[in-house]
Image 1 (cartoon, rainbow, N blue to C red):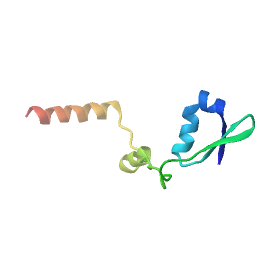
Image 2 (cartoon, rainbow, N blue to C red):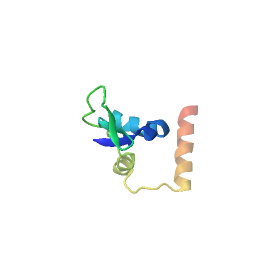
Image 3 (cartoon, rainbow, N blue to C red):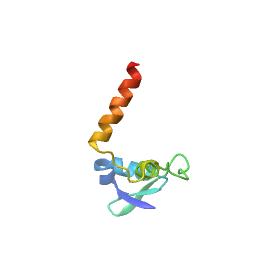
Image 4 (cartoon, rainbow, N blue to C red):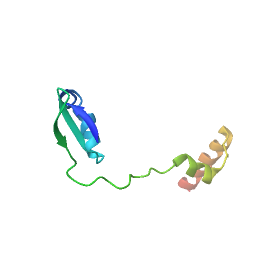
Amino acid sequence: MRKATVRDLRNEFARVAAWIENGEEVLITRAGKSFARLVPNHPAPTSRLVKPDIIARLRKTWADRIFSAKEVEAMRAAELEGEEG
C-alpha cells in the first residue's frame, strides 16, 4: 500500500491517481496520522498491452540489408514506370 499526504493530493494528484489506476491502494495521512484510504473502483488490470518490437520485425524482414542511393533510385524509377504504363 502506498502512502501519500494531503499535500500530495493537492499538489501531485496525477501521480497519486496513477497509483490508484494501476490497482494500488493509497493511504492518505495528515499530520503523520492515517486520515483516509483510497482504493481503485475496479480490479487492477491483469496484464498490460505489449507493444510490438518494430525493430525486430524490420530486421527479420530485411536482415542487415541497407540500400544504396542508386538502388533506391532504381527502385523508385521502376515503380514509376509501372504506374505510368
